[in-house]
Image (cartoon, rainbow, N blue to C red; front, side, top):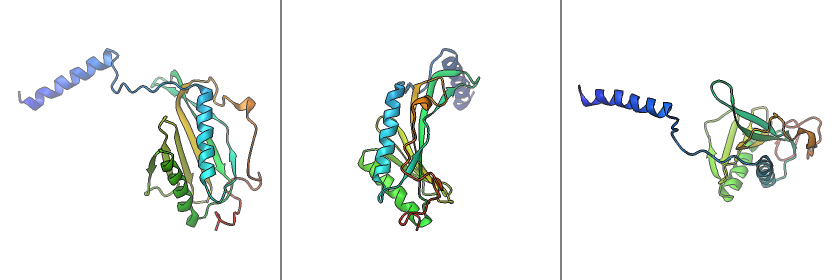
Length: 191
């Protein structure tokens, strides 16, 4: 039998042994983060990113949302991803979209974050970054001019609820609730 034909059964056999013996490939299991610590990380990166946008941009915070990890049988592994979204108040004009993404990207790079830019993305156009501690942050802009900043920490201990902090959350918008985020005319960002 030619050597390349012997390698296929051997490789298949090794894979089956690894899968049935409980071995995992990768071994990079991330530590589970305390829910309060994850909340603090998310708030810090959202506040830092929002504060880096000049002139200042009003926003409205969404709720913290937990997305439970499930396996192929839809069983939870006891962990979740915690995320939060911050909707920006002004309508962002196409001419200012690059400025907004550039300011966020420059801030993240200055903080030592690993930045990923996707120049091919059109709707939404976006930029994202990973902090050294694993926290993820991103900004997405849509053709209609609305934009938001999002951040997440993964994994956290499954809080047992989709909205784990709902009872203690209070709205702290820095934008007038009417006409709503992404619809407000701003002398700089909207023109």
